[in-house]
Image (cartoon, rainbow, N blue to C red):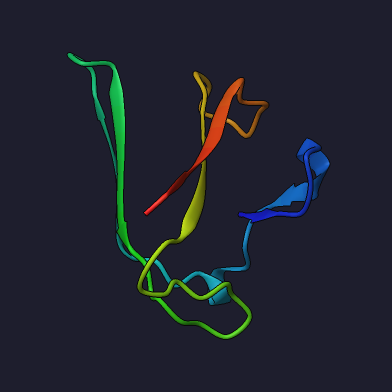
Length: 79
């Protein structure tokens, strides 16, 4: 997705030809009520923010619905 703003209308699916995640998977574990997303991300791509050695900031949002919706829990973290 491209996050163009805070409104749902500003969040749009990325074009398939620009999607470069490798080995992407989504698994739901019913016993734990947990969804795990795994993927490999290319560190440097044209038109994207480069992931460099050192501190990088990432965003996340967590919700309870499977559709694109408002997520009350959201934050950022650094790696």
